[in-house]
Length: 322
Figure 1 (cartoon, one colour):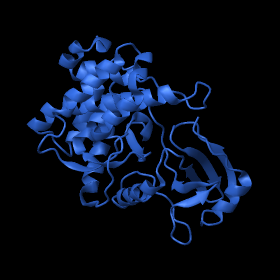
Figure 2 (cartoon, rainbow, N blue to C red):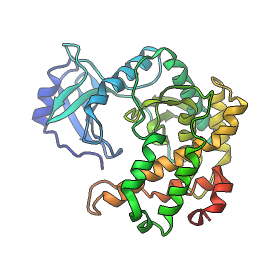
Figure 3 (cartoon, rainbow, N blue to C red):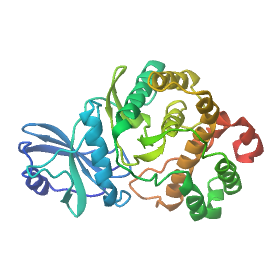
Figure 4 (cartoon, one colour):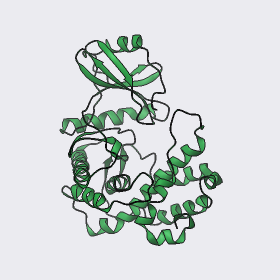
């Protein structure tokens, strides 16, 4: 569930008077997502999303996210920009939280994407990277490679309560990857950094929305594709790899950015990095979220298991991956 902050109908109706969007008809909390509180809002003039940004999103980062969405929207990409009120303001306050009223996009997120859908999604990521070529906003990747050691240290030996040996093996993988991470010649740009299937809306084989940009940042461009590949081409347990879906995803992306020999050879390292990043963040949540919390904890091992596909040599050294 992702409604942490309750908004009364009276407060929401008053909030909407700042905008030229009509009067409140109905509002319903949206269960999907884990970072923010989201409501589906219907008014006499249309449908919108209300997002209240919770503590895990730094309010200081919101101008970057809003500027990126405005930029992509102006380029014609299917993204949900925040709606400006009558005074031209995007970021508001509601119930003590930063809040935005956001454009509603049609479509559904996928649970089991087909190769055709994966190719369309890869093509959409390529379009996004083309569109940010002249975007000058800058935000450090708060969950990037430079942050992994610190998060690993914070998790500490408690990692072994998830599976015995995970503390040792994950520490080895982080150290091993650090030696090869910063390769020369890899492009950097603004990236989404979290383009899982539930952050892509589709109607049939057509992408109708790229959403949830709250990890967007500047980093290695191909890392964005690696994150997407790891998220799209495995089942929920991480045990089964759907190679045709992964290949289609890369083929769609390559329409805009054909992979060089160096990018092909470095892709597995970037994908292992994506697996480490989501193993760590999920492990932290697993260890620190109360069992009676409204948020459903996600299995950290689902991404750790993916390393076996991306680096069999590394997997052969680590008992938790065997």
